[in-house]
Amino acid sequence: MKIRIGIRREDKNPWEKRVPLSPAHVKEIIRKFPLDVWLQPSEIRVFSDRDYRDVGAQIHEDLSSCSVVFAVKEIPLDFFHPGRTYAFFSHTIKGQPFNMPMLRKMMDMRCTLIDYERVVDENGRRLVFFGKQAGQAGMIDTLWAFGQRLKRQGIPNPFGELQLSHQYKNLEDAKESVRKAGEKIKQVGLDPLFVPLICGFAGYGHVSLGAQEIFDLLPSEEITPKDLGSFVREKKYLDDRVYKAIFKEEHMVEPRSSMQKFDLQEYYDHPERYRSIFEGYLPHLTILVNCIYWTPRYPHFVTKKYLNKLWQGQATPRLTVIGDISCDVEGAIEFTSHATSPGEPVYVFDPVGNRETDGLEGRGVVVMATDNLPAELSLESSLFFSNVLSPFVPAIAMADYSGTFEGCGLPYPIKRAVILYRGKLTPEYEFMKEYV
Image 1 (spheres, rainbow, N blue to C red):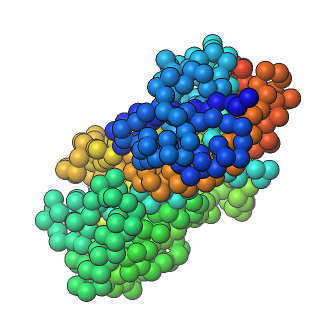
Image 2 (image 1 turned 120 degrees about the vertical axis):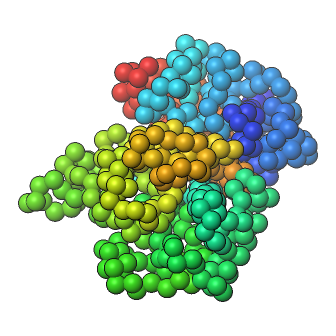
Image 3 (image 1 turned 180 degrees about the vertical axis):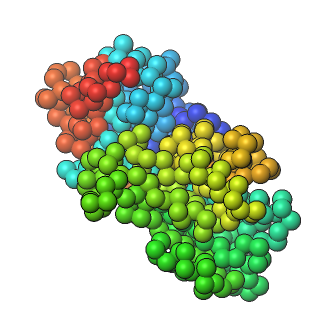
């Protein structure tokens, strides 16, 4: 007898077109395993209903008969059915208040929750994730914001014709637009008002690499963080290129004790023993792209207080745009007050008045804080994600959820990602009781 699994349509917003499994991987799963795949119909999904029908899947509105349902984003309360298993990004492990009703509902209905974010190997490395797409989309949108901000200030610039990521047909079209901007920089140079153009990348993981991939389509050179000050002061720059600096933890924090040396593992284990020194670099940056992992245990890296000081002390501060790709509200960037959407991706934070204005107008720094950037590159994101998720799907579908958690038969990486098992927090996630 075949096991029936479902794929929920994404409907969180009009830009969410991603899927957890592509038609090619659905075809492979149906061919190799005793599984039926049902999908809810969708008019905006990056792959059409017909694409899935053609590979043997079925389209049904009601997925209540599916023992396991796969999705991408959070699931509404009225979708859950008793005893079922759901795999998606739940955004609950930090106790996010807006998702606690969903978690309580799943507990009440004795559901099992597998969170993709927690699928990791023995070394804690994530195995199911949206790769570089958040960084790619975030960098495109950040350059768009920079170009639009300069246009409104009457400053000619090569980025003014860029579009937002979701407005391009695909990633390659977006890249071609960035390349064209790069050609203009080579040919005519940049306006003296924003030379040198220096982009700082906070972080060096998958997201940062994606953002750098887009930035490097421009004629770029790298500067080490320690050389930033002398580079600007001694005017070692040229106007026919752009510059980037990549910041690791060792550049961003220092031990509170002068008797102590920086130690990465100690910082991870005891961040309270460290303080941020990142703000010392800000006067030299034109654009900051934040790609770093952050929790409340870590310090703010860009504070309201420092930005106020910077704006009070300089007539026209160099820092123009912050692309907060990580988008932790009141996190690494303290004045990231809320997540923005692909339709309204930016606001201006005025550090002197301590207020923000939607759009691109007003005094201060432009903040791009879209929280579902991979959705803006739906095709590339879905193909990548399906490739990393599909090897785990048969084991998730065919596990025995009727017995104990210990005996369910899930492979180790997936078992570590089970937040709820039959409605109860698993041992690794019992700390979440205080949130629920």
